[in-house]
Length: 157
Image 1 (cartoon, rainbow, N blue to C red):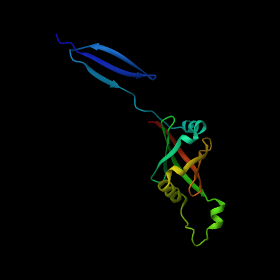
Image 2: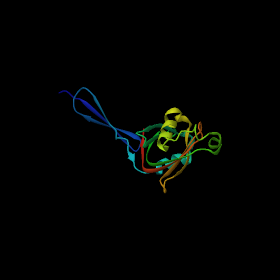
Image 3: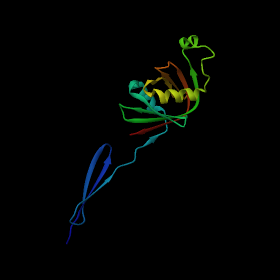
Image 4: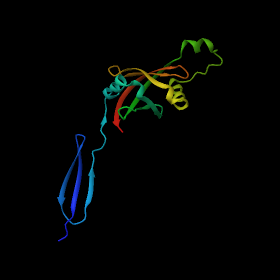
């Protein structure tokens, strides 16, 4: 009679439980892990911003309407679906620029340029989940971006 032991690893509440079933002679290992949960709430991002705001960094801007932020401390990925972008230029650069040399761009295009040119300089300045708004500041060009967010999504890496 050939006996094989089958091991099944199941992850429950952060602990791994090992159960053994006697089937045949050779051993087979089967791992069952649940998929990472996706939370459609801004509460997780607000918690990250409140506890460790310097750990949130911009990863990419997708299709000029989805902002992807990563938290290094709690290993979460936050996606913000942006509906409206407004840009405020600092007073120093407005007085220094002439109307002829200053380019008139859409606020979404300004954000895309900042996100591609210097993503590490974009930081979250302010966040309000109740009003669905997030404010970003670019440290390099000193622009302030006010985002109206239509959907928050958080996923663990």
